[in-house]
Length: 333
Image 1: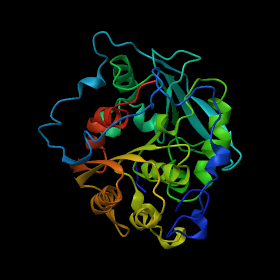
Image 2 (image 1 turned 180 degrees about the vertical axis):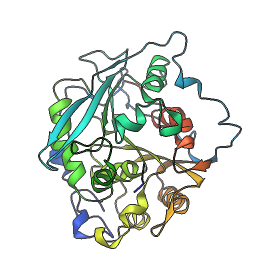
Image 3 (image 1 turned 90 degrees about the horizontal axis):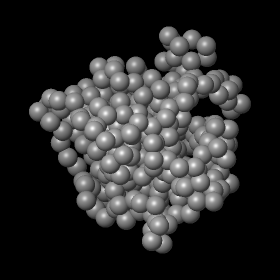
Image 4 (image 1 turned 90 degrees about the vertical axis):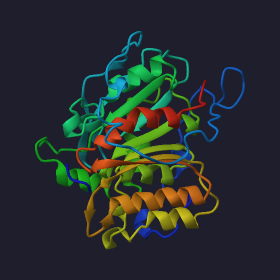
């Protein structure tokens, strides 16, 4: 698979093509509140696990236990793959919806949105980009490491050709514009989630997750919609794809550094020693700079650097359970 600012106004350092979506209008309405059962804040994560860490070959020599359903863990429910025709793109997006075994209709759940959701995140093929997401979520929700969960897994469009979607994938995920945030907030989420599942309206309960190109777009979404999403998990995220002339040379590190007031974001990134390198730069350097900029601005940020390559994303696959734990530590309804 190939890789590829404040809310309500043009992102600092971005071109006119990278204006941000209207998060206030797009924010969901829900009867669920943003407090825990004892009336306190939904998330009190503190600083445990923040910082920069190294994944070693030895630490990845065996499969994470979360890739196998653990004793006592209960499997959630995954809908069959369906297609959503987007008016914005004029293309069809395959999607599936996961609900954890402890999800109860009428009670709030966290909401996860995955790019490359079916092809990569739901796949169990470790050597071809599989993140084992369904079983990971089964285990983490059963152990209360993360709260009850609703997850929307979205693939990029194939335009009827599932064997040659690479160009459409890049065209969908690389541009740092409003197009994909608009697709999420005004099209696929209202059509498939709103009114059908009980998800919290608290932005601390909303996370977007992506690999490579879908990771780059995932950060674009959280940055454009800071009143909707507070959490982002990126594996080898293609931040560098935005920093080209056709997209106005959007340098995310500069955008983050220059934006005031700060957004309320919690960000976990994975890169690797042999990450993607092309004319746009070295993903290891770019992702490390993004992390350091987030830390310098006081954001809760986590970076794992592994020994492997951009594809398959073995480092991101192995770290995925711990990135979810960190993302939702101290979060309880």
